[in-house]
Image (cartoon, rainbow, N blue to C red; front, top):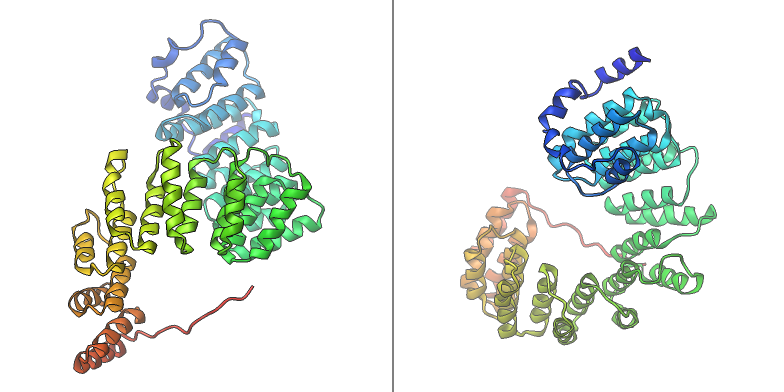
Length: 452
C-alpha cells in the first residue's frame, strides 16, 4: 500500500505536503475553529466560502482527534472548491489530494468526485484527468464531471472523447455534452445531440433546454425554439417554475430570431424578472428596430428600482442609435458614472455609433480618439460606414486609411474607401486604393446566406 501511494505521489505535485501546510500558516486559523471535536468540526468544515487554509486547519484538528473518513474528505474537498482566494486553493488542493491518497479515501467514488470537481473548478484539467485515469473509484458522476470540465475549458475534442467512452449515461451526461458544444459554438451538433438524447428516452430538464435555446438563437431556427417553448408549456418540465434563466433564454431566442411579439408575450408573463431578463428584452427591442419601446422599458426598469449595469447601458445606447436620439444618448452615457459604472470600450463604441449615424462624424471620431482604451477595428469600421452614409470625405479618408493600416488584408476596408472616393469623383485616389488592394492580396469573400 505504501509503495503504491509513493508511486502515485511521485507523479503528482504533492511532495512536501507538510511544508505546504506550514507555508499556508494554518496555525493562524486554529483559534477560530470550534473547541469541541468530532461532528461539530465536520459541521464547521461543511461551511462554504471560507479560506482554504482554514479548511485545512479544521481537517488537521479532525485528524488529531480521530481517523478521517471518506465523509471527511468529501467535505474538505468541497470546502476547498468554494474557498478563496483561488491562489491559496491551488496550493491546498494537492495537499488535500495527498491526504486522501494516504488514507485510501479515493477508493470511494464520492471522494473521487469531490477531488475531480475541485481540480476542474481550479482549471487544473490535466490533474483531474490523471485522477480519472489512475484507477480511482468512478461512477457516472465522475464521467459527467470530466465532460463538464472539458466543456467549460472549451476543450471540445476531449469532451467528445470522454462522452463517447461513457459506459452509461444519465440526463446530466447529455446536458454536459450539449453545454460543451454550445460553448464551442457547435450549435448544429448541439441540436443533433439533443435529438439523440430525446430518441434514447431522456426527458430534458430546464438546464438542457436553456442550452438548446441558446443554440436555436444563434442559428436563427425559430421553429425549433417554438417547439421547445411548446414543450415547456405542455410537458410540465421540472424546475421551470420561478426559473428566470429559461424564460430569459426564450426571450433571447425570440429576439435574435426577430419575433418580437412572442418575445414580449414571454416577458410580460414573468412576474419577477431579474436584471438579465430586462437587459435581454431592452437589447432585443433595440436591435430589432423598436428603439422607442426599448427606451420606455429602460425607464420602467429604473422606476421599478432595478439598478442598471454595463449591459443595460449598452442596450439603451443601442436603442438611442436606432431612434436617432442623440441628446438622450449623451445623457445616458454621462449618467453611467452616477451609477458607479465606468464606461468600457463597448460604451464608447455605442456613443460613437450613435453620433456617426446622426451625422456627427467628427464628434464620433473625437470620442474614439479620446477614449481611454484603444478602439477596436470594428468600431472604426462603424464610423467609416457612417462617413459613407453621410458622404463625409474628410473624416472618411482619415478613418479609411487607418482601417487599411490596422487590417491590411481585409478587402472590405479598401472597398468602402474606394467607393467614397468614386462618389466624390476622386478617380486617381480610387485607382490607387485598387492597386494597393491588389498588392496586399486582399480579396473580398463571396456572400453567404442561410435558410432554415
